[in-house]
Length: 98
Image 1 (cartoon, rainbow, N blue to C red):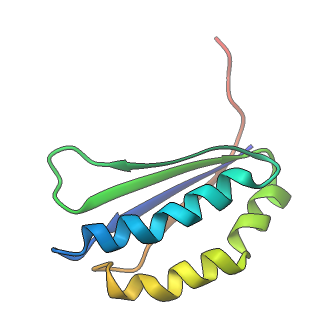
Image 2 (tube, rainbow, N blue to C red; image 1 turned 135 degrees about the vertical axis):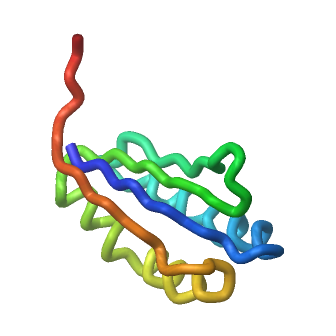
């Protein structure tokens, strides 16, 4: 399993633009075969901070997303509404059932 953690710092006053740009990315990522989960979260008590967590069955499924045109387009547009570049962490592992 591949787990993607992304950190977003939105420019003040650009939250609506950020969320509008995220919506099609989230919809398209969830539609990719091998995507298990893909969720954007607003951090409590942190103005303009969001986190995204995505789960993929394997690296091929993740690469379908990470090399997609919709994601390239989003990253290009993100300079308009993000205060810093997107911070990403990719983890390879498995869910442990206890």
